[in-house]
Image (cartoon, rainbow, N blue to C red; front, side, top):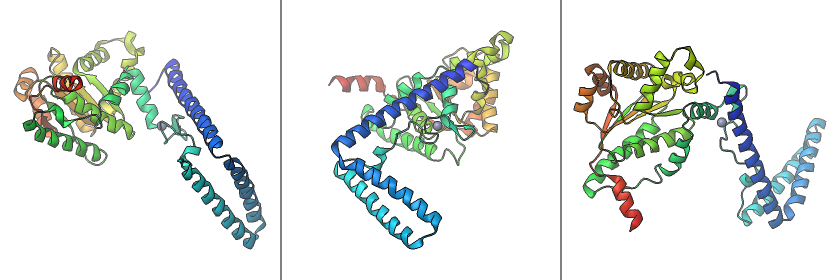
Length: 324
Ligand SMILES: [Zn+2]
C-alpha cells in the first residue's frame, strides 16, 4: 500500500510516541522498585560482572570455573526473583511493556512491516481511529445477557458462542457472518466484540457502514484522476484484502444498479480470496432480496452463517440498568 510521506510520518510519529511513553513508564517503575528494594542495584551490578566473567571464562575454556560461575549466577537470579516477588513485582516489571510486543512498538519486524503497522494504515486511511475508543467500551468483557429478556438469552448465548467459534477458527476456517435484527438488538455490539478480539490478535479489520462502502466504491470507479491522492482511494484495495471486512447497516442506503453490482463484486471477490466478511442489517432476508438481487442473496446465503437477533432493544435495557 503506497502511503504518502506525510501519512507514513504520522504513523511513525505515533510509534515514536508509544516508545517514549513506554520508556517513561519503565523509568518511573524502575525508580519505584529501586526505592522499595535498595538491595536490588548492588544485586544487578553483581549479576552484570558475573555475566562478563562467565563470557571470559567460556572463551578461555575453563570448564570447572564456568560451572561454578553458572551456579553462582543461578543463585543470584533466583535471589533477584524472590526479592521482586516479596515486594509484589515480577521480572516483567524490569522490562518495557509494549502495545505490540511483536515489533516492540517499532512498526517493523526486521525489514517487514508489522501487522500493527497495517492496521495503523487502515485506521489512518479510513479515519477509523475512533474505532479503538469504541472497542474499549464494546467488547466481550462489557457484554451482558441481562440486557435481554429471559426468553431471548438462550438465543444470545448461541450467537455469542458462534461469534467465539468464528474468532477461534478464524485462521483455519473461512467463514462469513450475516447478523440480522432490528435497530438496537445488539448486532453492532457483537460485531465490535469480534473486531476487538481479531484486532488484538493482529488481524486487519476494516469497518464501514454500507453507506461509506458504496461512497468509496463509487469514488474509486468514477472518481477520475483528481481523487487518486485521496486517502480512501489509496485504501481501496484493503476492502478486498483486509482479514475482516465489516459492512454495517446494509439496506439503509438507497441501492441502485451500480451499488448492487459493486456489492456483488465486493462479496464475491472476498469469497474468492477467502477473506472473511461480516455484514449486519436491520432488514430480514426477504427485504434484502427485494433491495438487492437474487444473485447477491444466494451468494450470501450459501456462504454466510446467519444470526437472527431477538427483538429486545438493548439500548433501552442498558439505559434502564444504568439509572437503577
Ligand atoms: Zn507491531
